[in-house]
Image 1 (cartoon, rainbow, N blue to C red):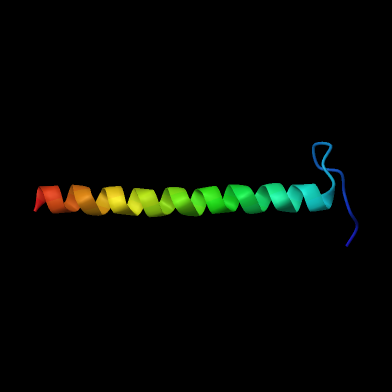
Image 2 (tube, rainbow, N blue to C red):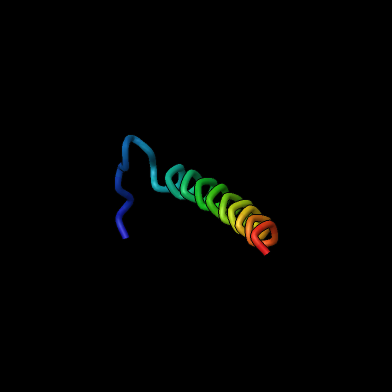
Length: 44
């Protein structure tokens, strides 16, 4: 697999950034699920 320049980033930098974004998204999902759970509890 060739290393491509993506928006001026090396593949390593891109993978690091992608990992951080994915972590943030997972955190967001957890928060969203918690919020949804609380909203469901309120409805019931």
